[in-house]
Amino acid sequence: MKKLIFIILLLLILNTGHASAQQAGQVVINSADWRDVYSAVAYANYKDIPYYFAISEPHARVIPKYLDKNLEVQLFESESVPYLVNYKNILEQAGSIVVDETRSASGRELNLKLASELDINNFIIVDDQYGYNAISAAPYAAKSGSWVLFADRDNIDEVNDFLNSRNVENVLIYGHVDKAVKDELNGFNPEIIDEGNRFENNIVIVSKFMELSPTDSVILSNGEFIEGAIMEGNSPVIFIGVNTVPAQVIEFVKSSNIKGGTLIGNELVGSGQDLKEATGISVIVKFGQGRQVTGEMSLVEDLDKFYLPRYELSLDAISAQYNEATKQLEIIYRNDANIGEFFKSSVGIMAIDERVGTVGDDDAPYIESGSDSGRAYDIDLTAYARTSNLSVIVTSEFGEAPGSLNLLLTKVLDITLISVEDDSKISVSNVNYDKRTQRLELAVENTGNIPCYASPSITILIEGDEEVVRLGNSIPLEAGEKQTVSTRVELTNADLADNPDVPVHVDYGERSELLVKNLDEVLPLNVTGGISTGLLLAILALLLIIAAAVVWSKRKPDAGAKTDAKPVICSNCGESIPVDAQFCPKCGSVVEKE
Image (cartoon, rainbow, N blue to C red):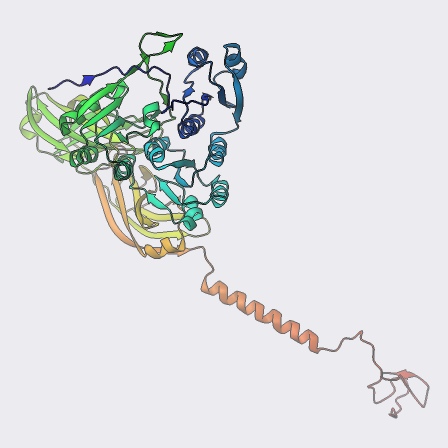
């Protein structure tokens, strides 16, 4: 095995962008908000001036030592989360001249403000909830003269107003964004890159970079931090996993003209080695930088990497048991993370030191956050179960999506023996979408004689893309019990028209952590919550009644209306009598009409 080539890239300035010979100034960023750092670095690169960003409070204190005192400073700092307060005074006391101080109320606000100050008409839209998308888009944005805008349903009106004020040439929506963002920006005829996971999306935008500026060298990263080389746009960044490389990334590199990659940081050395062995490209590891202070070179220091917020994924294999009744190997997995994740395992069965079988997953099952979930693999171990000490070697790739299995679990477990039959039975019916509450509902019934658990899901087309909507995890059902489970999903009339029938899948079983049975059916999707035909007819009937009453009231004489008829006096007794009377009500005489 060839060793990776380790090269210490000594940088003579701290985290500089591509600086020109005639430097007009320098940018300093004092903020713990990654969006402030990202936008200000992109701004400095566009202006072609050096920049310095703090990554911690101690780091913020040493930055003044590295600044060129002959260059004026443009300071960007967060109002709410600066690393140091009164940073302008700190810089000035160290001999720098701060000519402009921009305080950021929020990362999104600064992002729009800086965009408005630049002569840019090409824009890339990302949701800042997924910071890795901004990292993936950064080299292409720099190379294509585009600005990355942060947008979601909360600020899309502001972003749309800004775009309407510019002479927009191109809009690219990158990665997953809220439906409201797509709807609002539809008038700009945007290009959309959303292949379902960060690695597939990354491959597409790297391909776009290559079309714009062909190159045989790339940057390798996991997309979880900001670093100077990533932001400057000289090379595209290819995502690799923390301790494994997704298969689609390997295939892309193999099929490309890429000859070399620069790996940022030494945390990904294992993955870099895997990519090198699988593709044959050379890999250089950039893990250090030098500082120049008062004309002298200091010791090599770590790279300045600003880490983005991220979810920590976690997967463990906690038990292995062989079920003699069903001839299945059962592995129980545990997800202690705060989000659900997908995994795909290969399980080697060992009898002492001999491998006697291998089983695994063809697909990538989902495991809810904070839960245990088992997989049952068909294999006959009868010949070894009672005579050998059996164990398993579990190797699981896992991640946030089926196409993003970039983390690796390896664990050895002893196998215990059990004998359990599963006699659970269920049925499903009545898939319904309530337009008023935006809830998707399904009736699940335990048709067996014993309690069981069920995890139902419905596959539905949303904006033309298949999405799996999960309605619950290990829902308990007593014998004979029928439950309607639901979850909120926003579906348009077009979505409903695309889904006359929907596939329903249910994993179920007697044990909550091991749902060994499954049910698949296609059911019609009923839609409720609009105005029904009966209600519509009733409303129309009520309106007709009201209209008739109004017409009748206009035709009926007004009792209080004045009349031109003269009053009638009885010629016999002098009594005043009604105009239309024929006889006097007092004396009974015949009324003589004039």
